[in-house]
Image (cartoon, rainbow, N blue to C red; front, side, top):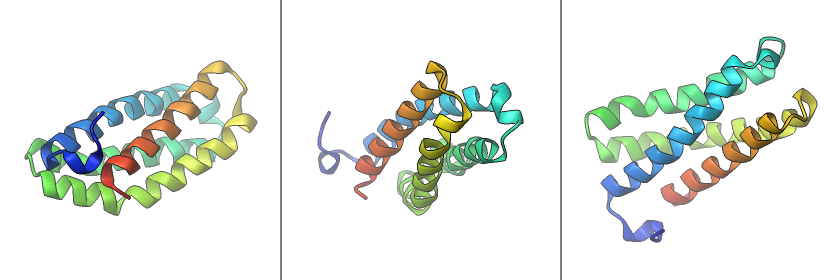
Amino acid sequence: MPESSDITPQQRVQLIDTQLAHLWMVRTFLKHAEETEEDEELQEVARDLYDYMLALGNPLSSEDWPGYLKTAKKKLARLKRTDVLFQEIQPEISNHTNFKMAAVSCHEVVSEVERLLGS
């Protein structure tokens, strides 16, 4: 993978959006998990993941690469807090492999998005 400083804004957006496809699957898993119905913090994680991706939808569809990157950076701190919360509560929620892998995937996506944003 190229260094994040060696790519165009459009390429950076495409790479981030690919990462968000993985995050979408994590969010979908959490949204439909029985455990989520019973846990307010897990519901918050699913909502916050959705909110991050939703905020980037309009700039993506209008091909506003600078706007996309600006919004992605602006909302990154909240995405990182959401990841930290998920990492903290996941062992308490379930030790099932699905939850463990969702936590790993979420963390890896957030780390890669942060790298791509140069934060």
